[in-house]
Length: 93
Length: 93
DNA sequence: TGATTTTACGTGGACCGTAATAATG
DNA sequence: CATTATTACGGTCCACGTAAAATCA
Image (tube, rainbow over all chains, first blue to last red; front, side, top):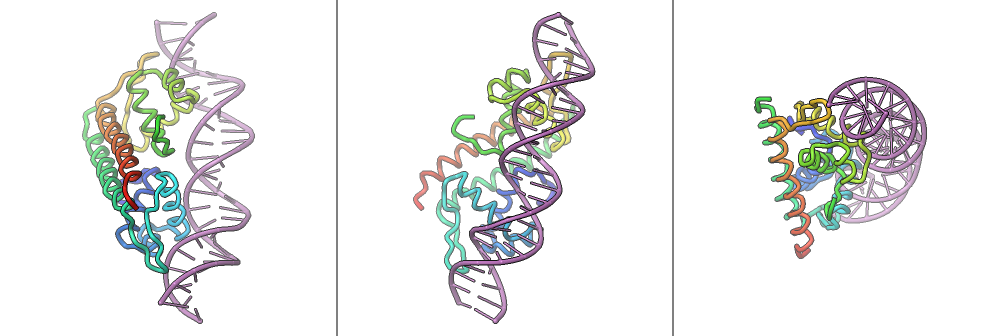
């Protein structure tokens, strides 16, 4: 999770990582948590956006069109938060 | 909270509202929750960003420079989520 | 059968509202 | 003293990890 550790971004972080490596196991390793946690986070995102983000094809998973759209915005969101964190820190109070 | 009702955006929503009306009481009314909840949410944001977002000047509160910076990004974030929600919904799966 | 994902489930922590306290004018 | 913000506190809900089950190669 790097510098940014805001809890409410965890799901987005999990989604981005999963979209990148396409493996729940690998995603869990990278984010230092269990596979079931990743599964749940992705399920919650799918419910919140009422979308299917990944196709489960046997062992392989595949990003859907809807997933691609979310991925694009997810990256923007994390960038935005990182940028905000830096600029807030350097803002003279 | 309008169409977007993702729980993890509540704090940002509270912050934007408070920055607009500069009253915890009024913010709580608008968001249909209690004042202590707003207080806590703002405190958590201040802790997460390690920043003072509002100056407490007696009964009046005032947005700080850091608060102004966050406000700018907070609005971008909510817009981004709204936009993502719409585009995901219209994406052919 | 081995590897991976999902479901079940119990516990610990977070969140919210009520009540009480503090602070301002 | 009236109004507003904060703190204390208790109950509920959510999230995570472990364990078990399911699924595929």
